Length: 268
Ligand SMILES: C[S@@+](CC[C@H](N)C(=O)[O-])C[C@H]1O[C@@H](n2cnc3c(N)ncnc32)[C@H](O)[C@@H]1O
Image (cartoon, rainbow, N blue to C red; front, side, top):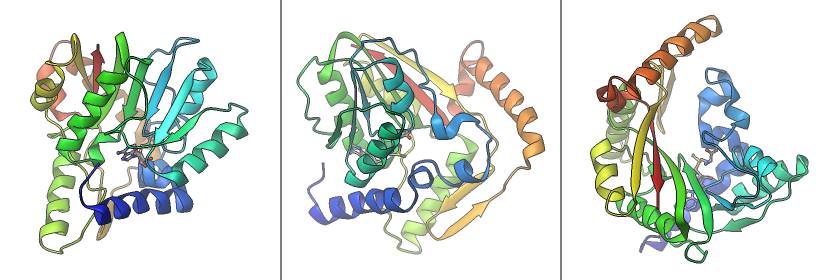
């Protein structure tokens, strides 16, 4: 994945330590623990259709939040993660629900699977922690292991969401002024750069925008600053955010740039 072995060790250690301490917390952040703004965060239904029997890979499966409901639909689900401890957490989670699933330790930039071996691959909130160069390698690997006509779903944070702009700014301060080394620092994607990587590889590239939440939480390693919106406003905010999301993905595509996350759907 990277030439610098120390970096790789530190990178994996953050995920391993996080998984041992609190896997949902390290994968989803404080909002998952403190609020229920998005409802199902802790047991997320896959944000795409899964068909019984299809071969499907969860790349960067974490503790199996999405893999569990996917595995409940198809027996041919597989999870891969770079962190052994995440896989232990995923194994426990899946065993607890009586859904034994093959889990593989590996790096998304060099996937240990044969060419054309999956109907579907999805990778949710993983690329954001890799350099852009490695992110592109992961996308190329996804293309390689997909069967012709297979589909991949990749979720990344978008560049221009107010929350993400704020996070990127605070991250820069923490790295450049406070000299904080954050192995899993976030990267944010522009629609244009996704098109540049994906269009030459795939027959279809569709980008949809999700989560138009207000900039209500942001954090850096040196300061946790959360503006928690009281529970009673969640319903109304959710309705508003769903409306904006619908509009961005239909009549007003320019709004997509301001979503918190982008879902890239590509067909080989
Ligand atoms: C933010 S979590 C998301 C977990 C899961 N996709 C979810 O949505 O709940 C990122 C996960 O990606 C894994 N990961 C990070 N870099 C990876 C890589 N190069 N290859 C495979 N997995 C990786 C981490 O160990 C972690 O479990």
